[in-house]
Amino acid sequence: MSIFSKIKDAIFGKKAEAATPAPAAPVAPAEVPAGPAAAAAPTAPISEVDVEAILAAEAAKVTQPLNWRTSIVDLMKLLDIDSSLANRKELAQELGYTGELNGSAEMNIWLHKAVMRELAANGGKVPADLTD
Image 1 (tube, one colour):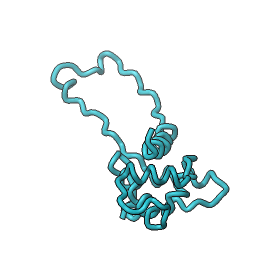
Image 2 (tube, helix red, strand yellow):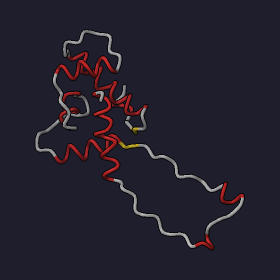
Image 3 (cartoon, one colour):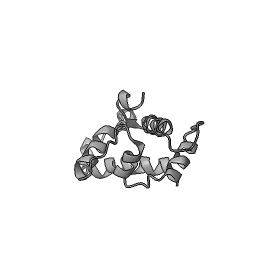
């Protein structure tokens, strides 16, 4: 499993745990639409995952202050994902980083923004200040 997939699963899985839908009320047979009305019934839209809310809630649970809003290392720590240089190098390669894979501030800042952009591209609701 890729490092980004682990990050995405850690965040998007929290949404599933936090928002388990209540069972739908049974519909009496007389209420079930038939014919063209049944075909025109709207489907429920797929909701976005509020990445910021999930991460803020996770950060509130930990005793160590983590700057997940700007630090890729702290973001990975918050999600209980190995934040070693080797994993960050692998993540950088997955996401197309072309600079030196040396753990520099430049690489880490790029990684954080790239992860946030990818989360947004995969159905996450991410504030613009975390992706720019």
